[in-house]
Image (cartoon, rainbow, N blue to C red):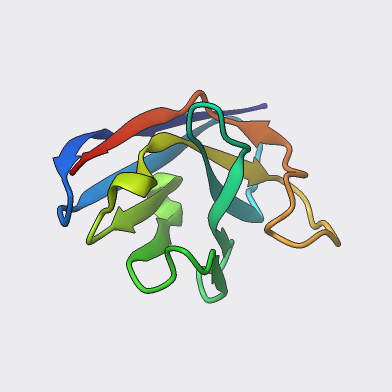
Amino acid sequence: QVQLVESGGGLVQAGGSLRLSCAASGRGFSIYTTAWFRQAPGKEREFVAAITRSGVTTTLADSVKDRFTISRDNAKNTVYLQMNNLKPEDTAVYCCAARTSFRLESPKSVVYDYWGQGTQVTVSS
């Protein structure tokens, strides 16, 4: 029902910025919550940020809370992750995920209905 496509990844120097996009497509869908997760080679998947349908409520991991922001444009069916002051430890594949119905689980939970393929973010030191 829903396809998610990430874009905006790339190679940046430490201290630089990137803006990731997660575009949703399909018919007859409504997204309640969208989240970003990341996974570095040899590491476990890590929650990064989440945003509700309204865009009013956002959740960010402590490791990125002072550097990243998440926002959405419902008219474009797109969620953004603005990443500032990037650090080498931010290097990972970033995936977006979406819930199309209300869930009791925390937005930090990996319980999402749809996942994108991911986009690579590499931060050089």
